[in-house]
Length: 411
Picture (cartoon, rainbow, N blue to C red):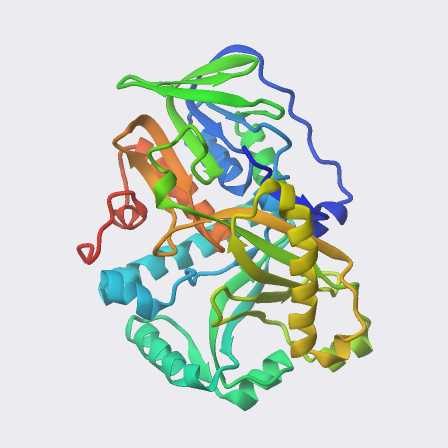
């Protein structure tokens, strides 16, 4: 498997707590559910399955939370990567409303769960979806009309209102309440600790070589042992090399992030960005947020998967491009050099939605893959959905994220 992240992660560098260590798994073991992948999705699934009474074993080939999770900007957004209008063209307005409702519910459920675990508080904040292109203003007004018709709270902002919130000029924007920000690494560790407290076994440094599924169960084969289980949850973020039958459903992408030095109060006033998370209408889009210690976290410049040998050079180029993009928004930062720069590998799907659930070619496998840029929210939704599936009580909306979804899914 390729590395999920390169560069210096702000989240790991500023974590000063004691991260738990989980010994490698050796020998033969038995579980109800074996989970492959120790990021936010896998650890949330371990927690929810263990709380539901399942015997759970989670394995990660490296350290818990230090892969794609540590590359996230951790915007807990109810908005999928694709506009409401585009999803409605594909699936219809009624189904799109259900997708948004499910995503909004996942944000709320994740916030409650982390609060119950005593994790560092999530910061509730609205999102501002904006455009600097005059031609996009009408499209944003149409987007708001569709959302509000579906009962989604949001409002159009004119250029002056966008500037008041963002500190830069734009033609229009959409303000949507009910979103949040979080430290993804701390959130992942909170799920991991909670899962262990609920009885789950977690193992680091445990590489899976293959998963053998049958009608009766699965065997997760490790370099140093194996797990016999009723179900295997594949929470690796994307289809790994052994899942050849799924590879065509995903487009592998690299995303890039920079973080500024901490900005003094006078510098923050000159920037003018309020308490709001930003993303734009560009494709690929940029995204921007404050960190708790008053840095600007700015990402984007996504590219199709970069060959491993050129990833470091590509990161340097993209970081410089992002710096220039940020200065274009905030000229007062012209002399700023990023203190952090990193990139992460992620999987995108044609409709911007993840694949969650079973697949006919892989018996007793449960998949949670392909979140695009919305991994925190939809990863938690996936954990909830997989628990419901194993318990035999799937929600009707879970099918909206399944492999068998089609255009114009039944409303």
